[in-house]
Length: 257
Length: 266
Image (tube, rainbow over all chains, first blue to last red):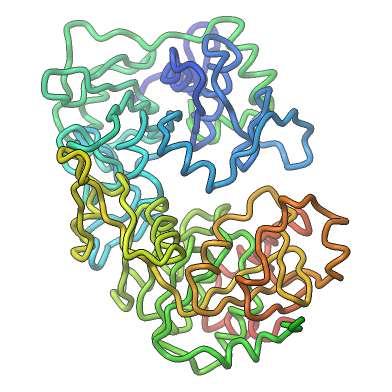
């Protein structure tokens, strides 16, 4: 369905996804980037090493690291610590607004509502998932993006079963800010830059057609004219991904080519 | 000076059916597992648990000890979904109060401050407001356009936490990167009990960590238990990492099989 994962110059789909995730943090300045998942983590660290050098990164635990760590390294891997961010401080910080998180989404809908809580009725779920975690607070306090490594009609649904992260059709009047910047999937990049904030195709990854992505989506996607192709990594970005940030190739376990 | 040293059995003897128990730690990190084991051995039931949930919640659900869970998530970290908690939710055998994890902190803080609620934005617009009909909003007296969630206090009958070091007086020390919300759990509770890896002389507390690691002071605790390895199989940085093999066995073995084995351990 998604065609050949490799482009002409050997760039994999996972690498295109990592760059697409990195682009989410472009222009964010001096805030904490909180990526959940391998490919978003590669993306945040790539952004910090290239076009968003002021981003504040963490080790995925309670420490802010001065230089991006490779993904998948243990607690004994050497790191330069520039700050401390235990969970209590993280809540202070996210309520302060200096954060852009990229969370996962078991379901995401047309207006950017996200569900990681349960499938089926909440009172007696068909499948209990993680619970809402911090999604309600994230989405009314700072910019949020989502990462969906398996784009399918089960993930991209007309209406989520439970609103964990708040979408554009439910923004409360007292939200500090509300921005769902992008949804990055293994097929493309999606945003809400339409008059009614319905999900729009922003770009398609190389080898993916509009029919592919519409067929894998449970609601009609907005399309503006000719859809752009997601950009390829530059040579320097490829080197950083392959040699510095993810030398173990963990990205390929999350997105298959 | 009171000597607060006690045992898991004495602590669990204080518990009553129907109590609200707050459990410190986070996910599958620094959970007071030897105290949980003792609860599993006891006849106590109908508990309401308040937790950044991990196997503490899962085991107590599996053993039928739980009436209700107050949580933002329940996870084993390296295994994202807690199987026994999921089973309990999916069979409808427990009640649930599912809230944003920041709201949970706010509920504990409100209880610790002895106020009935604290305002916050988290929850607005989400389904949390619909599935918790008891949750109310409040309008700012300073700005009528500002409507916030009035997160109710979550007072606890008992808090249970696990620290790296403690002294016999009940002062507690964290040596890892995060103390989570253990201080708030203690301050939200009528009684708080702390297990620890090692009880040391008060004069030795600063030998392993700075003043800032002394997050729990003796006013917050009513009993301290020396329990080396007491968080296992959850992690207790820097003393030990999570026992991933044992956690995996727990998560993939039916409780009827794993439970008796777990109760026999140490």
